[in-house]
Image (tube, rainbow, N blue to C red):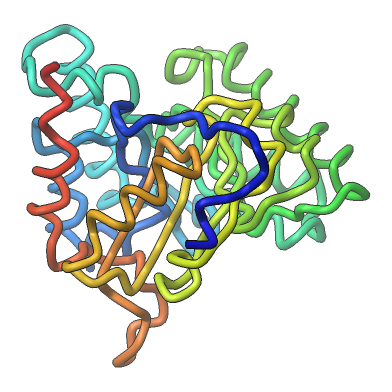
Length: 276
């Protein structure tokens, strides 16, 4: 299969590494209460989840989003302090990220920093997801400037936010110029349909980095192909995933805005490694 690349370079994973979820952004908590409740459920192998109100923090604090953010933060606190042994993955992750829309490099730097500050002030986010991130070499200096400034905000905010260590995730959806790997904690190098993913190839330069540096989002994955999808993610060296059987059809514009119909099943398939 094409995803079994013939580069001569061994892939990073042998299948034993623990996958976890990155949630690119559920619908508003008022519209998707079940989805947000699931993120706080003990035993869910959550690396991070994105809070997105109108492609950013919104115009003012939203009470429903404040409640969802608080529940997720409390769930992580319980995991960090060992109150639930099923949540060792969440103790290392379980972060809430604010969504910043880069508009492929067209958003002014000042606007992005203002949005980031609002996310920090209102929702006490742990890091940021940089959506619609450009991937070319020419845009790399601007992305580096932004991520460096965001890292400083997270580390030296007054009061300090989160734990001062990100993460910063670049929502690329494709393999960028290799220099982007040094600009953030994690890169989303695939976002698209299962029909493309099952025949996808990984960029050779990614073999120099561990799985926790990459995330894959795949929609339209049939239940019967979950095992194959997870094999591809592991072989291509992605440590964070979000798979769904939803495909954006039947009036749903964003297939990642709701739970997959096999949510419990995929949690159980990934979950056994939590307590190991």
